[in-house]
Structures are given as structure tokens and as C-alpha cells.
Image 1 (tube, helix red, strand yellow):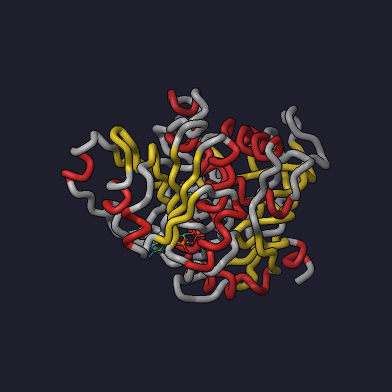
Image 2: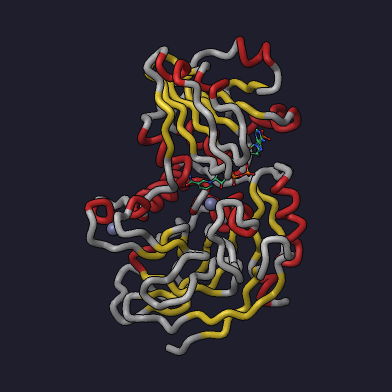
Length: 351
Ligand code: NAP
Ligand code: ZN
Ligand code: ZN
């Protein structure tokens, strides 16, 4: 199989709009699959990386890590996929495969550093990885998951990052019947967290800064909705076993620690670029924890896809064409999306 010149969409600078670019995808190695990308979600991490919010972005950057597509070619050693299969790719496309965490299926904690699907040094092939805002991608089959046929493909794409990122901590902290679970922020991650926590059987309380989203939260499955800018609503909120914080910008996390039961945990998955300050007494009184969680391993990504298929869960999406990406990024910056943008990649092919 030959290397392919591939249409992609990315940018050469933090402040420049995204535009059409050409990249090269490698020829499929024996354990690789080649995927025609059908849909790709837009996560706030794409936006942070484009803007170099965390430092370390290398340009040009081709974002995109919520990828759903169809296998167009398989290398000779691949046994778990065949041409024509549906396939999903999330954040992780390689890891050391030797450390304890890789062996236990937690590649996101790989001691030797895992390879991100976009803007990551490619240890094996050199250069930097290019993400899902592109026509096709070539990935080692060990890092590719099966997308259940019953899911709507466009609205399943966000499960590959938003879905796994909230499923993993909800499962780890044992969200389920009899548990009060809070979710902060109704964005891509937050709205998936409401649906998944509810399907796990938890009593779900949502905290939002947006009145319009508060009115929509019950439709998404929330049992209680708290407008976090309203001090009375915050004071009257029942205490929570765990609160999952999906906020993308600096905010006061102590306000939410105050809403935890004894031994409760505030678990952060949002990645604001500025540090959050935690008052010592806020966690000391009530033996509370402030913790974090990072996406999930490949095996657990397959698990969340299967969980979503069995509970009929997908993201609420706004499907866009590639030429609407810059407008979508501007709206995402303002929290103005219900609740995930997904790009129909056929529009790139035909552009
Ligand atoms: P998103 O769709 O933009 O949602 C973030 C939500 O946070 C907004 O919709 C808004 O909800 C709330 N928010 C934004 N600014 C706020 C502020 N200043 N104060 C209070 N609330 C605010 O983003 P996303 O794609 O869900 O990603 C959320 C964060 O998670 C990002 O930082 C992203 O990089 C990170 N992330 C982490 C992982 C991981 O593995 N840990 C994986 C994926 C993403 P309301 O309007 O409801 O208030
Ligand atoms: Zn993401
Ligand atoms: Zn490893």
C-alpha cells in the first residue's frame, strides 16, 4: 500500500483561521488499518491546542480526536478488523505497550508517554501526528475501536473523547443507584456526563452558568438543575457524593467542594490553562478529595461505546461542513453549542 496525499484542515498559527492543507498519511504497516474518516467531533481540547493555551503546540496543527470512519485497508497482520468495518479513533494512537499501565489497559497513564492522535511527536515514524480534520488516517489496529452499528455515526463520534472522559471517572468513583452525582458545565463533556451518569442509575444534579441550558438540562436527563450564579440555588443544593468538573476556564472550585458530602470527591476533567486554588480547610473539613481524570484506555473506550449502544446514548450535535469550522470554534469559545459540533467529513473530500 502506498502513502497517500490527504486533504486536511488545520492552521499554521494560534491566531490564524483554519484552512485547507495537504498532509501525507503513511502506507499501512502490517498491523495498521487505514480509515476513511466520516465524522469528527470538535472538542474544547482542540480549541485549547489551536490557541496554544497549554503551551507546546507545534504548527501546523491538524486537530480532531473524535473520529468515526470506515476501514478501507488493513495490513497483513490485522485480525480484528476487515475492510468495510466501522471504526473509531480517540486520543491515543500509540503507547509503550510494556509498562504496567499499558498492560492493565490504562494507556493514558503510560510511563513512557503515549502518542496523541494530533500534535504529538510520532516516536515511531518521526514528525508530528495529524488529527481527524482530514480525509483519512492510518492507525495501529491495537488503538482502534469498533463502533456499534446501531449508533448514529455522526452523534457517536463525541463518545471517542467526551464520552470516555466522563465515563471513566463516573465508573471509577462508582456513580450508580443511591449516589448523588453533580456535573459542572453543560458542554460537550458535561451533557454526555448527564446522560451516562443517569444511565448508571445515579441521582444527577447539574451546575450551569447558562440560564438557557438550565431549561434544557432535564431533557438531557438531569434530576436537579442549579444555576451556579444564583447563591440561593447553590446554598439549597443537596450534598453530593461526587462532582465532576468539566469547566474549560478558570473558576472557583471551592464553591463546589462545599457541596460535597463527607468523603466526597470533586473530580476535575476540564483543563483550564490557569491553576485552580483550593482552600486547605475546604478539603480538611469533611475529609474531601480534589482529584482528576484523563480520558480512558482503549479497552474502556470500547466499553463506553458498547455502554452507549446498549443505553441508546449519543451526543446532541450540530452537524457542520468543513467550511463552517472557524465559526464553530468561535461559538465553542463562548460556550454557545448544543452540545457538540461534529464535522461531516464528506464536505472536506468534496471541497
Ligand atoms: P465545552 O463544550 O466548551 O464545555 C465547557 C463548559 O464549561 C461550557 O459549556 C460552560 O458550561 C462551562 N464554562 C465555560 N467557561 C466557564 C467559566 N468561565 N465559568 C464557568 N463555567 C464555564 O468544552 P468540552 O469540550 O466539554 O471540554 C471541557 C474541558 O475539558 C476543556 O478544558 C477540555 O480541554 C477538557 N477535556 C479534558 C479531557 C480529559 O481527559 N481530562 C478530555 C476532553 C476535554 P455552562 O454554559 O453550562 O456553564
Ligand atoms: Zn477531547
Ligand atoms: Zn506504557
